[in-house]
Length: 338
Image (cartoon, rainbow, N blue to C red; front, side):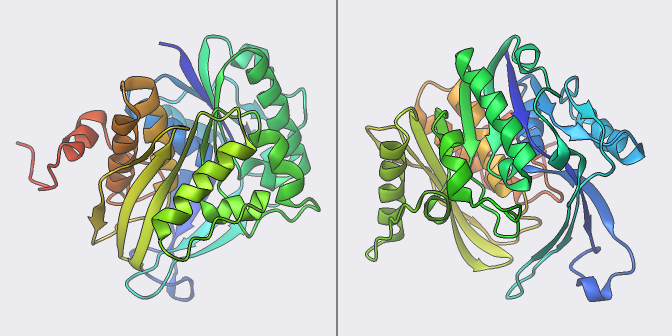
């Protein structure tokens, strides 16, 4: 089976134990994660060969991140080494009516200082069928945006399927370029786009507000994104209704240019960790589009996979294919498998 390549930043995440606030913390739990690396781990768990491409410092923390990826079967052959530091982020988990909070500490991280030519993309894409990147990566720095474009140009020349998760982050994009100056040139090369109305407005000034229904807004967003980016054959987005920090309603939709397809609704009443929910959705969508015969099955798998992620601590989805398919078939019992 040909490989899926993902490109982006992996960071060390530090969180106070349980649901403590930063002001209460005297210790932090450590996990590793990032948009593109989370997708790679999901796919590896589903049996898809993956390679994660990035730049990490040649020190103990960079090596620790590589060890974490290898633990889950993700290839690390093309990670460039250099730079001074690994990016960090601190997460204060929310509960009930108190929302979560993220503080980034990623300025001057190794990948933010990556340069064109550091990655041999033609070699990376040997025996590859798919390339995935996140909108977080070009938000890190101009250098990261340049290398992302370099990768996309090579993938397009080689006829590789390209996907992106638009992933708008308001606390990034602080190096002098606005998202609307950078993202259109990158997204126009994509075959699969994951993103909702908020990101579409921030990146491309696409206004899709439908006062009559939320579903109408998503439908309009999908159609307008495909009109704007005609190379795209699938536009998808997750649907999150926030009841509280601990209780969300969850679903997903997919537009293939002809049909608007919706997944079943899930009530996630006791969220363990919602970070990485979108990445698990993306990983499930890639797997679904590669594996199933219909787009309905693909969006159903994607939505079920991301539903299960909300029950797992950390950034990454550690669900396996049989568990996702069990939920797809309607088994929500949570019974012990004996």
